[in-house]
Structures are given as C-alpha cells and as structure tokens.
Image (cartoon, rainbow, N blue to C red):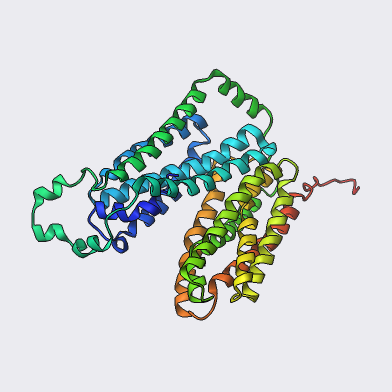
Length: 412
C-alpha cells in the first residue's frame, strides 16, 4: 500500500511542491536507490538483530514518513521522504522472506505465497483508497503553468523558509496518507508485541537448533538465482509498464481497451498469487516454477507470433500474468530446500530482482524509441522467458549434485 499510493497521488504531491509531474521524476530514482540500500542494509541487520524488532522499527519509520509527506512543500524534502520509503520497503521485502524461512524453513511455501499475495493485494487496494479518498481534484493544467521557478520570481527567502512544511491544498490527500500511516503503525505494534514475547526467543533458539544447511555450490546457486530473478522481475515490470503503450501504438487498440489489457494482466497476476497459497500445499516449489516457466514461454511466444491480434493479446496477456504470479515466492521456497538462506543471501536475491526491475524497462524504453515499428517489449518478454527456462534446469542440476567424495586410496 505504501508503494502503490504514490501513483494515484503523484499529481497532487507535485502540486504540493509547486512542480509539474515531468520535473519530479527524481522521486522514482530516490525511491529505487532507497530500496536497494534498504535491501542491502536489511540483509546485514537481519543476521545480527531480532527480526520482529527490525521490522517493527522500519514500519515506525514508514509511519512517520507517511504522516510527513502530505505536508512537504519542497521537492527535495519530498524526494528525501520517498527515499526513506524505499529503504523501509527494501528492508521489509528482505526481512519478510527471511522471517518466513526462519520460522517454517522448507515447509514455508504456502506462507511465502501468502506474503507475496499481500504485496499484490496492497498494490490493488491503495489506488482504490486514493480514488475514494481524494475524489476530484484541481486540474493539472492549472498547475503546470507556474511550475518554472516561481519562488525565484518572487525573490522572497522568507517564503522559501516558510514553505518547507504546510497544509496541503487538498486535505483529502492528507487523509489518504494518514489512513495508510495509521494502518502501518498498527501492524508495527503487533511486531513489537512479538518481539517482547518470551516465546519468540525460544522459537529462535529452536530454529537455530534445527541445523544449518549449506549446499556445496551455495554461491553458484545464489548467483544463478540472482540472474533468474533479474530476468523474471525485469520482464514482469516491463510488460506491466509498457503493455498499455504497446497496445495503443502497435496493436491499434483504443485507450479504453488498452487499459483493460493492462488491468487483466495485473488482475490475473494478483488472483493467481492468491490461489497459489492453496496450490503450494500440494505442489512442490520446483513444480510450480516449471509450470510458471512453461506458461510464460507459451504466452510470450503467442504474443510475438500474433502481436496484432486483439483476441490473442487478451488470452496471452491473461496467461502471462497468471504464469508470472508465483515465480518469485516459489524460487525463494525452492532454494531453501537445498541451502539455508541468511539475511545477506535473501538481500542478494532481492537486489537481483530490483536491478532487473530498474535496468530492463529502462533499456527497452531506449531501444523501442530507436525501432518504433518493432514489438521490442514482446521480444524482451520472450527472451526473458527463454532465459529463465534455461537457467532453472541448470539450477536444479547444480542443487541436486551429490557432494564430491573424499579422495580414497583404496580406489573403490
């Protein structure tokens, strides 16, 4: 919810800091940098601090940021607060995975699917909350004209110092962020309660007594899974980000149809993440990854072969969203069956996905501009599906290799 609320409120936040949307793109860079920093920091801290305490503290920091953001009247201050959001979410993403593996180990597949379903659910609910809470706001055209350095024209340093914080023009913006901030704070209270329970310490000692597994090719497995998540997350974000523009410019769809195509991708994605909670109780994580890879490969191939067929676009997009849904949580659950995932290892895997999320869409945007007549987005999705379909069998073979026997003088 914290991450997804930015999209529908971006225009109102830009108005708050007297900037237009195009000149405030640094906010996404700041959040992405914060996310990477939070993933690295979380991976280090989760190996030496109580998990519940660290998650609770990160949520308290998020709560403070959510309450402050609507009052920000300077773009730099807003970008800093969004960077704090990124740090918090990076720590939560890493910490949530580590905590589930720490509690349930290789039996935590349904819980891992539930965790990642909650991401999709929050991303679905936050824009609805913003729409209901914000209602109609002032048109963006009234805001963009004075965006070019109005404080310099006024020449008032007093106005600059006084405008660091202030009430937003639309109080509904404040209520939307305050509602989510209050919810986040309530969750942090539960985490602090778990931290203060004596049983949590007993569970931690019990978990450590279960033993520490380390595959012989531990580092190689992590590096291959890093690449696997790089291509998977990059393709997921690329298709979700560009499917609307692709449908309108390349497939000739109307904007309303293209918006529906975008919605059905994320809709099937969220629905299958919810269903995966139940599937994970009867299917092994490796089986779910294979099924996801087959679905991704088949749907992306259909998209490339029939890129201008509206019917095929609808069917293949639905299948693609469903196929992408369970891959990440299944991958984390699968690797835990063969080697123990520490905080640093989980952070390494999360960074692989986040780098794919940043790099692949950016490269596609540049290449698509140079070759506007080609469906570069679809080629990328097919290439990523082929890459993940090739990497996983190598991962499986490496994970199931018997340990090298010690040299024997008997020759037997």
